[in-house]
Image 1 (cartoon, rainbow, N blue to C red):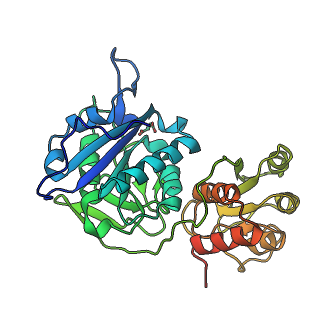
Image 2 (image 1 turned 30 degrees about the horizontal axis):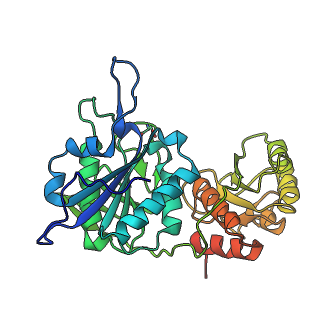
Image 3 (image 1 turned 90 degrees about the vertical axis):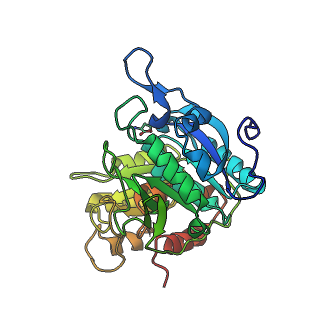
Length: 345
Ligand code: ASP
């Protein structure tokens, strides 16, 4: 990894401006087209900064271009490398960090970073829905808003935050809810933590979070993400286990339901790998004991499934992969899901 770019301003001598470290992994915010065809990642972190002169008055900035890829092509390893970079930036004196990437996978990468982010300093993940060559490209505004949040004292200790469209979201709650449009991101169950108003970050909601007390993964467990649907016969679930996946997250109907046939497959799967049940609605929590039919949430718990609670399936998959990578046993996995899914009593 390259060291932080020294061509950018030296740390403010008077200490008047905080230092913010900015890294880019790619995404639409970096995408251009030379010939009028489809856009592809090309710009560096430094290019992005050059397009927003206001950033220089907000903070002393350092940059790093870690990857120049679409969000879809990011891997667990890329994000863990970015995590390492962010940690060293803070150790080197940055008071906040901004990570730029494709919006397609922000809801997963931000949560992955959040699980291991034990720093007080804010780590902000941002991107853009419109590439820089379009009229009203949102990248510059998102970048400026992110740097402002990264500098804000109220953002400290809140873990990883996702900032787009002048909204501040918790990494564990945010989802990309629309395929396009500036308002693509929402925190469907509880709403955003705050907003950027007249350039000032304002937090209206608080929530508890703790980073994961496990070593950063050195391997990438394979966790299947399956969604049940009308007429599902459970064959895919059997196939996933048979193919050697290390765990499964199953998006069930409503509060965590599947057909009676899938229920039998859940029991078979849970006998050999961790199976986590989430809601395919992506909004609201799975239940525990309200329904009692075959394939209901209470039945699936009896058959060995663990429930994701308020965590959506994608985040539950990231959590399960990290727990497996960290060598967590069944009770530990259950405990972490209970706590992080918000069901701890
Ligand atoms: N549409 C995506 C974005 O907004 C593309 C990507 O994730 O790279 O960045």
